[in-house]
Image (cartoon, rainbow, N blue to C red):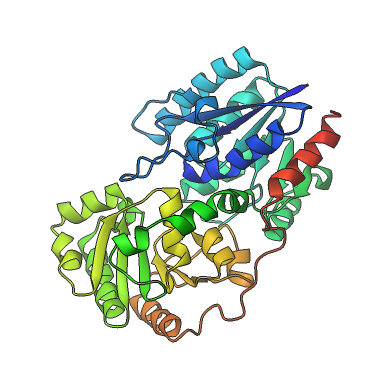
Length: 368
């Protein structure tokens, strides 16, 4: 029996390890242990606990972290994971995500000379100012086994000098999470409760509070939303920190008072899936739903210049529109006319069975 510790911090990381926990548990040669940073990510309104959706909320070992800076949080989480790893003595640590907690888990395991595997390896947006990009590179650098979600990850790792025998193309594990809970999402009443109609609204997701903390940028978002509202219904989901930025700049009425615009706090994962699935298209300032929107074939206009998942652009429904207002407006017109994503396909192995492929690889490597 091989003990495997799965570690994650934020929502995106948990979506990569929760289905893997269940897949490992079904195989009698493995004993999975799941650790996550606290507080666990929850929907602001729903109180949704991601682990509970998979029936394993009582299996999660909370990893206490503290600190007001990335360095402080990482150091705190490293100490917590060191204690946990020494107590559990796993045969392998598997890390999901690219936040500070995921990095701490990988570094702590490597420092203790424990083998490390990472889920979603090789993803690069080549923006060295991005904390997530730094974390991804560091996690990969200390990993012994690298599970890749798309072909770009393979190419990146090989170009960076990683041994091909350590790299395994298994597909996107986050799609396993989507497949596991999509029936609950279909039963959700969040679309009706939000006052919009299926496939007749644009979903606006604002997640990056630090990037929005500028009055001129907020004014640009206001103009974009007004244009959107002139074409379709608009539903805006605001991260709590983004909502605080709007309040600070006294910009809340700029959105809540616009006819045809509904504003609500960010939701739990199940409700988010339903809102993504039933949107006409999405306008967002982050890469948070690029994977899900690609599989659901919903056009996604991402106000960034880069993405760690080029497959969502090359064959999916994701469009990088940057931050120039003219470019964004042009893409909005194209999306409103139904001209984006018409020939999109689902990337290879994004089929909801990536977790089982990982289990198959681990069975061979660990000689279970």
